[in-house]
Structure formats: structure tokens, C-alpha cells
Image (cartoon, rainbow over all chains, first blue to last red; front, side, top):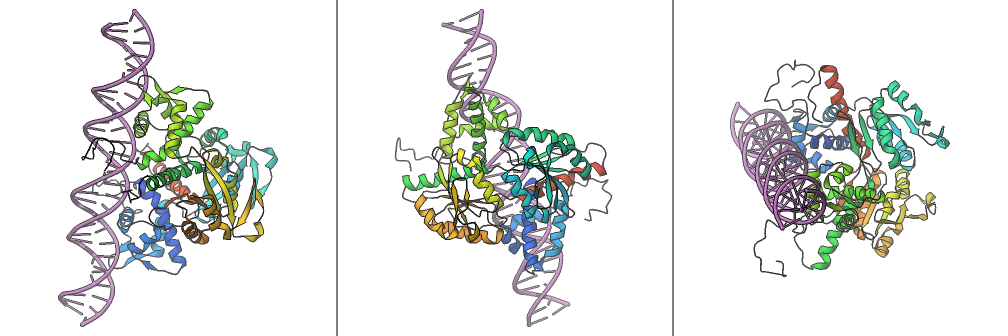
Length: 238
Length: 238
DNA sequence: CGGATTTTGTTCCCGCGTTCACAAACTCCT
DNA sequence: AGGAGTTTGTGAACGCGGGAACAAAATCCG
């Protein structure tokens, strides 16, 4: 069904898209998008669900079901047009035009984020780097200067910033978060090891390096003890 | 079967620990651990599941169920002993003594990771920083020198490194991954935007900054269109 | 000492996500 | 044109995780 055209006054019960895509699927769409870009760069024009699934590291059944939430963009017996599907996914995610982003906290990590090409090349535009340390004020990273935290509200309003990245130390994180939210930011990517509480309507995603390592450590310990306690291949559910 | 105790031929479904903890629970244990450390630092000796759950950002029912997989470490009517529970979780995760870690790829991100206090203070010890760029060789970050990639195998063997962190550009990631695995590393934390294929028995966790942003972008777009199309507060499932 | 109160540990139920399996649709070859 | 071979899209079964509700245990107080 063409999303732009039909008058959506009728909430068809058969419609697979009441306006939302399952969260698990949303989390995989960017992976598919990246795989498609890689295929396109290699000059591939068409691919089957099997090929794309392999490139994305998922099984083909899941891939097809995920794509089916977007619509029917494949041709049976043929596969998917790489460029076409790439555009459709980009449109669905909403990264067809660059979204403005601010980064708060330009320590080691913030510095790395500011330089990270993946941001700018994948649908985002960093509009400001903010830090409370007045010593760093004016220092440039790429072509952006580090600006003072007091400019936060003005920048968010002027540039219509909807996404904020928090890369501050933990103690400052929640205060920064509150200011971002008050200023109008409705999506936050949090690198600080803190639980952020936000109002309804604001999305927070957390990236925590030491938590990831600890999860690995747990599995590492399991592997080690399974080996040392029992020589035989104990049934270790992968 | 279990040789100790009564000949219990029946694999009791009531037994909560056949040797494994649900993956979702494992992913939350580090969060509880951090919350407990924070409580201990504030001098709190005892806490209820409600308090700890609030500090960790989960609901108390989930917390209690998670903890029940580890054993019965609480006292009904009282709560949990902060120090005791902290130790039990740390032991379960396997971070009571420091695990050796190598970081490969000392660009902006690798640099940030090398400086990140959360690694060293939370059960890990960075034993080496590796980079293929010979220009950076010998440069020191903290008290560690950057060493050449050719030392990878030797370091992994000598230091019994089980966990590797990949912070290289995408094209180099899989090659580095293969070398780490061949050298004996069985857990990998991957920051490169690449799908890594590894043998059974090796765990990979992926942290992808642009994917996180794209997930936020999707929800951002949904919020925006929900507002512009419909002025009333449409039921947006958070 | 016994009842009221607090808080844990567990059970039950529901919904989401994954996977299998298959019909429908399309191409290609004879 | 028709049949064989591909490949998508989807319906149904299944298992896992989340949340509410409850019983068991421990403390507190009269």
C-alpha cells in the first residue's frame, strides 16, 4: 500500500501496519541498511533474502518478516533491488535528510564521537559540541568549535535539535539530560554510566562499555568452569 | 548426571539453576552491581528490592526474579545486605579478580577506551594497546605503550587474554578478529561497523554508535509525524 | 507469646519475537 | 504456452521474558 496516498481514516484490522514496526525489527533495520550500502558499493544490483541475511548476520526468515513490515518491496523468484530497498529502509528509519545532533561532554569519548565519520555519513549532522570545561572552549574538532554548556538551550532551539548525545562523566549526566529535555530534545543517546529518568515521550538509549565487558566476562567464566570441572563436552547451550 | 547426592534421575524442572542464567538477566546483573556499589559508597548497608530496583531503573518484580536465579541472598521482611549482594553478583559475573583485556585499534575511539576508568575499576585490566600504524608505535596512553599488531599472538598467549576489544576501522576488523580468535581469545567486544563471523564457543558483542542513533531517528520520525498528522495525543506506545 | 507488618521468593499468565513451513508469484527453459 | 525451479510473503507453533499476584518467612510491637 502506498503510504503517502490512501486516506487513513479506515483502521483496517487486516493491515499489518497500524503505524508501528516491532521494536526488535527497528533495531535491525540499520543493520540491513548498512549491508545494502555495502552491496551497492560492490556493484550488486539485486540480492535474495538469503544473501542479504548472510551479509547482515541474521537468518533469512527473520529478514523477510522484518522487511514485510515495511511493505512488499521484493519480487518473488527474483529477490530485492538493492538500491530501491536501500532507499525504502532509509526512508522508513527517517535518515533521508540529515538530522541535527548535539554532543555534550567532549572528553576522550566525546572527542572520538565528534570525529566519528559514521555519524555524518549516515544521516546525521553534528551541529554543536558542548563542554562545561572553560579551558577547552574554542578548541576545534574537525570544523566545529567546542562551545560552553550555557549555549545548550539556544542551540537546541535555533537548530531544532531533536537528538542529544551525552558523553559526560556520570555525575553530570542527569543534569545535562534534564536540560536537554527541557530545551526540547526528545531522543537521547547516553554513554554515561547512569540510569536516566525522563518524561514520557522522550526516548533514551544507553551504551555502557563496562556493562558489555561484564556480560562477556560472565560467559567467559562459564566457559572456563565448564572446561575445568568437566573434561567431556558438557551440553553448553550456546 | 549429577553424581553427588540422591540418584535423582529426573531433571527436576523446579531447579532454577541447571548451570545457566537467562541471557536477559545476565545483561542486567552489571546494572545491579553498579547500583549496589553506588549505594555502598553512600554508606547504605541494607536495601529492599524496591529501592534497588529504583536505583537500577527496573521494576522490583523483575529484580527479585533476577536475583532468585543466583540464590536466596535476601532476608524476608528486611531486604538485601548491600555488601554481601554486591560480592555475590560480582562473583557470579566473574569480575572478582581482574580479567586481562587487549584493545586493538588505537584511533580516537581506542584512545578513549584506553583512558576509560570504567574498564580498570570494574574487574578488568588492560594489558596491551595494539595498532597497525607504525607512526604511533611507542606512544604512551596512561602507563601503557602502543605496540605493533604483530605482537598480538604473543601477548594473548603470555597474558592469557580471553577478551579482545576491536576499535579498528571496519575494513580491518574481521582480519583482527580472526587473529584474536586464532590466538585464543574467546570473547570479543566489537566497535567496528562490521558483522563478525566467529566459530562456536566465541562470544561477540557489538556496539554500534550509528545504529543506536538510527534507532532513535526512527522513533523521532514517528513522534514528528504523529504530531503533524494528528493534533490529539495519539496513543504512542512508549 | 501472638498477631500485624514488611519484604522476599515463586508461580502464573500474557504478549512479543523467532522459527518453521507453505502457498503465491515470478522467471526461465523447452 | 506450459511446466519446472526460485524466491518472497505470511500464517501458525513455540519458547522466552515481563509483570502482577500470592504464599512463605522474618521482624516488630503490644
